[in-house]
Amino acid sequence: SSDLFATTVGFGLILAFSAVTQPLDKPQAAISKKESALLAAVTEAGQWKPTDPRIAKAYRELGDLYSAESRYPEAEKIYQKRLELEEDALGRANPQLIAVVQDLARVNFAQMKYARTTELLERSLRILEREHGEQDPKLLPAIEEVGKVLQADSKYPEAEKYLRRALAIREKAAGHDSADLVSDLSQLARLYVLRSNFSSAQTYYQRVLKIQHASLPSASPELLPTLDALASLSLEQKQYTEAEPLLRQTLSIREGGFGPMHSEVAKNLDQLGWLYTQQKNYGAAVRCYERSVFIWTKALGSQSPELADKYQKLAEVYAALNRPVDAEPLVRQVLSTRENETVTSLNTLASIYIARENLTEAE
Image (cartoon, rainbow, N blue to C red; front, side, top):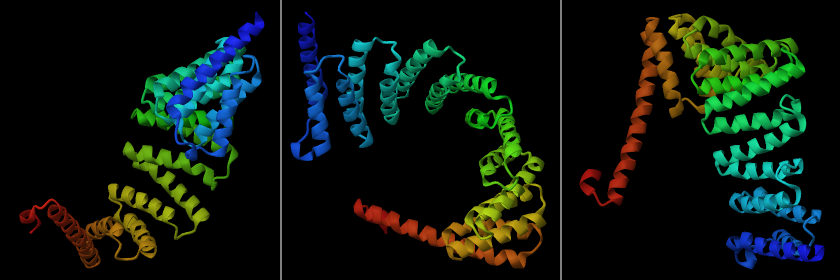
């Protein structure tokens, strides 16, 4: 009877594979040697005993090939069939299913099927919880993955629940001030930014910065993402006094890391110039903008259309400082650039009308 069972299951595998691959058929010339070999291996798997590990290997390798080639719908079908076969052989709660469940989740995520991805990752998490309990650090990657997918799906309250759970587990395992917490704290902070909860985001980034300051030099480039985020949050909330030292620190780090003429330094100077303008500290603003314009001019050329807005900001500060002689040529340059852009746009529009045989409008 066991032989009969194996034969029946084997025949079922052949039928199952036929159903999976039928929609994937394409001209033989378009199939690579590797794909052809893997397809043959999966077909051959239908003749093996259902417990033979080569069955899972054949499906996994074919699914991995399709996934690597970004053929996600095809990979999804193969991984789904592999999951069904392994469920029959191992049961639905066996920890050995986690790998294929995660593979299936990955290709669903690549297709932006967020609900299905979440369902699969939550299933993987439940299996881990049964194995290790609900507070074991081994659960952290699974919990964080669910949170990130929910965040990508704009389900922010649900994502927050998972991310806060991950943080609590890591805090208990590593300590309240451990560098291991930086990733979780930063992820939660980004989530709060997406929810426009800037105050909470600021609190979490400040905690990240405190942890980083304990282990990194004050001029470390690794501080930049946190400092930039805190500066942006301060500017968003018009907390200019808090933003200024942050922007000055990021400027110092970038000057040391990239050199004084780098575009990243110019961007930092633009932010500082804007901040000083809001504070009506025009003397400090003009120094930032003059230096920024000098860097951008060297990088882009004085006639670059990208400089128009930068010339405009510097001209406005000159005007505020009652320096019309300095402001005038900049404003003329802005006008000239924008006139050229307008002419180019009008010519393009005329060409469109000609193509549509609307000659009156084109004229």
